[in-house]
Amino acid sequence: MERLVIGEVLKPQGIRGEIKIKTFTDFPEDVKQFGVVYIDEKEYKILSFRVGTDGFAYLGLRGVPDRNAAELLRGKLLYGDREDAPELEEGQYYIVDILGIACETEEGEFLGTVKDIANLSSEIYTLENNGKNILFPAIKGVVVKVDLENKKIIVNKKRFDEVAVY
Image (cartoon, rainbow, N blue to C red):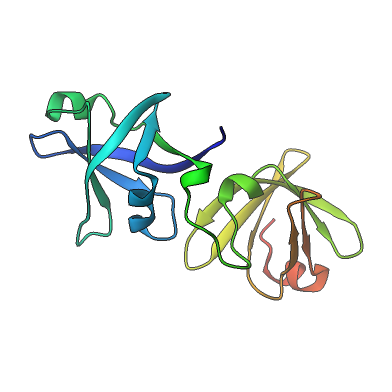
């Protein structure tokens, strides 16, 4: 079964084993839908879930009874089963599906491979081409099409050249 990275444990919260996580989902509440998360291949049932005023999610997990157990999870990634993931709307994609695919112009010119995605005011894609990084915002007008079937992103060359940072 395929798994998606859905968050990272930042630190323990309180003395009862609750953990503070940074979510990698569009909305922190999406993590709750998984019901079960995996950390280092170990399965944990979500017992409690809340979103703090700081925008971070706080989870209580079965098998994490206290602060000491929660401390051992600090810095680890949380995974969820893809089949439990929320349905995506048209034009939305999971980051895991974008990483590693090619980026090219409408004319077929290869620009690089997607190496990283940072979520700022818009998503910033980092391409790698011959050891060099190119950053660009994945915004309307730049990205023409995301073709997951053929594993490539097609961009408008003129707009790409206007916004890309080499």
